[in-house]
Length: 87
Image 1 (cartoon, rainbow, N blue to C red):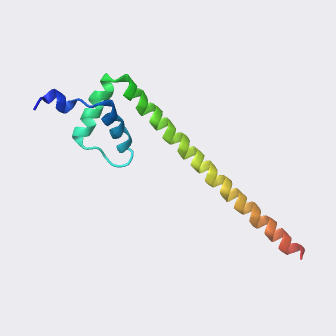
Image 2 (image 1 turned 180 degrees about the vertical axis):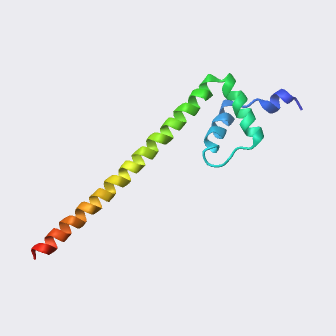
Image 3 (image 1 turned 90 degrees about the horizontal axis):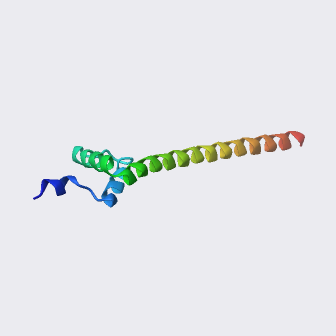
């Protein structure tokens, strides 16, 4: 088998590995192939940056949504407490 074809990744496979690395550790072979590919392919290199940025944005949005939910619950409890106090 050709060694060059064993090392080369398609962009599709590279993006699969880029996303996979966020879920489970890559094998040494996968890390090496992804490293080589992203050094040669600017599109996939940019995809790594954009994917990481999107993940961070989603995480921040999720945290913000959770905080808003907690604040709403706290406000709801205060209102109910005040209504009970007025009785």
